[in-house]
Image 1 (cartoon, rainbow, N blue to C red):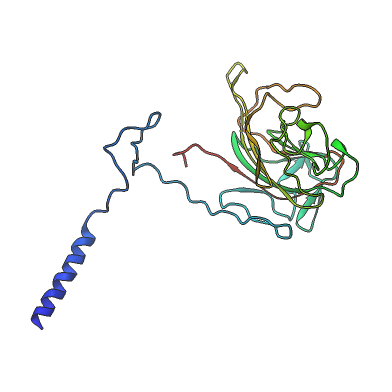
Image 2 (cartoon, rainbow, N blue to C red):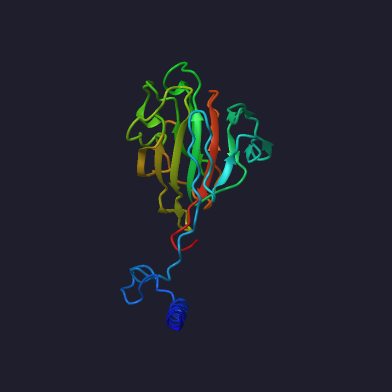
Amino acid sequence: MNRILTILFASIATVAFADDKPAKPLGYQDTPIIPGTKWHVHDGERPQPKVVTPGEPSTQAKVGTAPSDAVVLFDGKDVSKWRKGKDQDATWKVENGYMEVRGGDIMTRDEFGPDVQLHLEFATPPASGNGQGRGNSGCFLFGRYEIQILDSYQNPTYPDGQATAIYGQTPPLVNASLKPGEWQTYDIIFEGPRFNEDGTVAKPAIATVLHNGVLTQNHTVLLGDTPHRTVGKYNKHGEKGSIKLQDHGNPMRFRNLWIRELKPVDSQ
């Protein structure tokens, strides 16, 4: 019995001693510094990435949810986060979890930037007309850089005006449009432009777009803003701006809009 107790106490002491040992380092401090940073290769002291809970994807019948760190721009209930003009409330109709175009363009009350991830879902009305007259709207970053929204399902038009085109500049890589009435998704990664003090461009805007999960703009550099029938140009503006949705005369529907401001690595 005494021998058993001795072995038991020795085992407990060994466990206790093991628990007192310092934690194994997460990484290394004897490796080279990564150029442009203050961190060693495999540096365990580098800040851990922020934990974000992903949202649930939408289906045709069910509206998804936003990631835990996103700002929800439209939750299916009201348009309180949007405005029409400087001092007017948005007038778009809200029902059944979506908002429908009515009464002019709308803009977010808050501004975002300089770099963002924007998610939106839209459904075009039954096919009527053709080209730019069919299911037309637009999503404007900083209120001036348009990612075209259009019913491009079996609907030829000028390529730099198709769905997910950088309007008037760059057509989509492919046409990933669904039939009219079906819910479609845009996921836009937008890097806002940077300006020098004298108003010249230090870094142009860059857009990456996925349409229904398909890459249609791959790190596309913008030439400037996106006017109709002329080449865009840059005019100096702030590091943040509103998101604008266009009323182009078609009863477009939108749901599940959210945005994330993108921060540099190690800045969370």
